[in-house]
Structures are given as structure tokens and as C-alpha cells.
Length: 278
Image 1 (cartoon, rainbow, N blue to C red):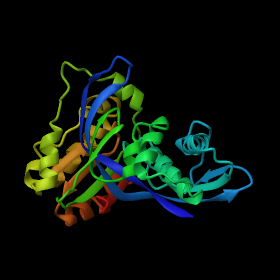
Image 2: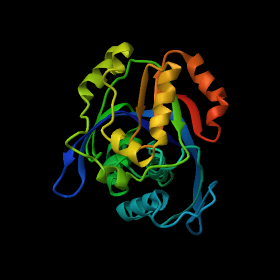
Image 3: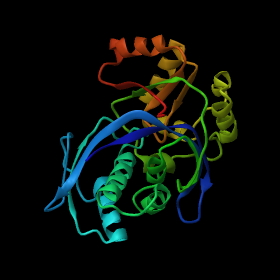
Image 4: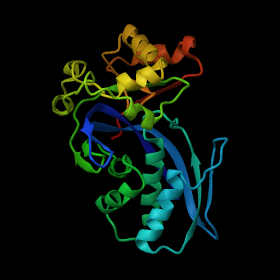
């Protein structure tokens, strides 16, 4: 069986505050992208995991966690051979690992003929990771709590997306630990949602924002360079996704993206042109 794991961007990310359980309360607008990992999965005599990266997949990987989660929840006896062709970069704020987990959980459901809808799998997937429920649903959504509250909406705003990621990634744990709640920004997710629903692209530039961009930029200076570069190029909306280090730019001028894709000054940085999925 072949399936795809779709990346995401946070069109808006507000860290409301820190909860008593140590997690952070979030409000986000999350959008799935056409950028994806390509996954093949089939039955096997023993579990076997491979991918096109240099290091091995260990038990802490979301791919393994996803299989174990499905096996425990539904009493699955079968084993699987899984190969993931990674296109989504790691430590990028694009939910690459979460997307892989979501795609594998849905694939196992279908392969094993499990009677469970996407909502049930999404609730189960909270055990694997905070972004996995959104990746299971895979549609423009308001996401709250620690990622478990998902409110899909119909997006009517069309634009092209450029992803620009520096070499260095950002540790999510370090990024959250570095938030200064006395100075950080708290963007209004309702304004971003309204723009996306009402096709008000011009207003997006004034409300798309990310609480985590300030601490992430202190950890990885290249995030600031990427933002400044894209703004100078003339992109209307520029922001960091998730905890970084990817900076995304939104535009209705595809030639701007083509210019950046040809720019030799940033050779080696991850660059990708895509759209919001569906």
C-alpha cells in the first residue's frame, strides 16, 4: 500500500501560557501542504522500518510509536514492513514526524479493515504526539489545547507557499523553554481565520504571527536572516512555522517564488514551492 504524509504550516500560533501539567496552552491556525513524505507499507513476518535518511529508525521515532499505538488499541497481530521516503525536513516546524505517524495509523486501519473513522484515529493519535491529530484530519483547522482540539473550517483564500529552511533546526523543547511571556506577542487567531474564510489576502500580512518566532530566532539566528530576505524580495506574508526553523512566505505572485528558487545565495537551504492541500 502506498500513502502520503502531508506537511503543515502554522498560519498563526499563539502560546497562551504554561499549564499546571507542564505543557503549554496553544491557539493555532494550521494548514496542510502539498509537500509530503511518500510511504509504502505492507504485511511482513516481522516489523521492519527503513527510510532514505542516513541514521536508523529507533523506538522513539513516531513511525514506531504509531505502529505500537495501533497494535495496542486494536489488538493487531500482524507485522509491517514500512519504508518512508522523506521529503519533509526534520526540526523544521512542518510536522514531518507527526505526518508520518498519522499516515501510518490510517494505513494500518485500512490494511487491517478496522472499523474506525478519522475522528477516532485522531483521538487515539494523541498518544503519539501533539500534532498527530491534526495530521490525521489533514484540513485547515483551528487547533487548541496542546493540539487535541481541532475545529476544521472551509478556507477560501488561494495563494502560493514558499518554504525556506536554514541548515540548523530548532529544538522544540528549548524553544518553549525560552519564551519570555513579558515580551512575547500573542496573535489573534480569529483574525487570521476570518481572512482565510473571507478571502482577504491583503489583511493577512497584519495578523499572521507566531509567539515562538522570537525565542526560536534567538536560538537560530538564520531564521531572522530568512525573514529579512523574504521581506526584501517583496513577499506579502512572512512568518515562521511551528517552533522553526522553517520560514514560510505567502504570495499571489508566483514569479517571486521562482526568483528565490533560482537564488544561489541560499544554496543548501531547504527551499520548496507548494500550495495548501486541497
